[in-house]
Length: 298
Ligand code: ATP
Image 1 (cartoon, rainbow, N blue to C red):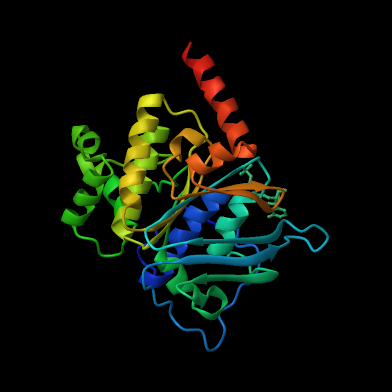
Image 2: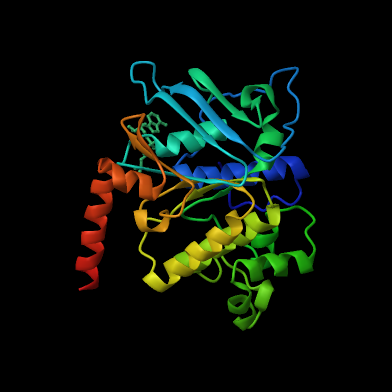
């Protein structure tokens, strides 16, 4: 994750894609460098995606051998379904995203995609299959066109515009005097949090991966912007397998499955209605957030 502001156009396509994914993952998970050598096996094959079923099977993981972080986590995301991860800070939600991306290898159990252990496939094919929308999208000091087009090497102008439209940022871009040629980033036009996230969404739409990891923004976006971003994220998730790291429960009430994490374990799992009926931790978190939202609105 070094020198991420450098234009990378001269690098090969695959490297560029990996790099982009790593940049997004880095932003998402606060990682500044690839932590350890995760190597392709000599006989590693390309991932063959058949729908994008993600399975964690009794996954154990420790960053440091003296402290286990995931203590036997199991779940399955069926093709096209959405799994939301909720739980206190430090409960292991982001770690699950990092392991799916194979930033680290599990210390026990297995992570599979469509039945293929991710340790047996090439990292380039794994990273190609996964799109990451971090809370805070990294912008390069370059044009908006470049920043969106970064999702796919050799994207045509039409494809970039179509992605921007789908991410609902096209109208904003065309309202700028220089349109798609406007320079953004540190040395150019500063985009708002919501606009940056839309660039990230457009990039990912262009990449068109079967699997998505979404990190819901914790930063303050106004309610209107947040609703509209949620809508774009939901649309993008159609027909893809999605893991959402959620901070506000109201945004994930319609997820196919909600996993409540606690200290590296799955405490509860089910749909919103099932978990409310259960009257456990999720129900308590829901009651608390609803009360807080009512108070804010008053
Ligand atoms: P948050 O909601 O705050 O993002 P989280 O549920 O995503 O939290 P993780 O980021 O998965 O939690 O962290 C789980 C635990 O692992 C925490 O106790 C954290 O301190 C620890 N941890 C995370 N990254 C590292 C790392 N690179 N090295 C060592 N420990 C780490």
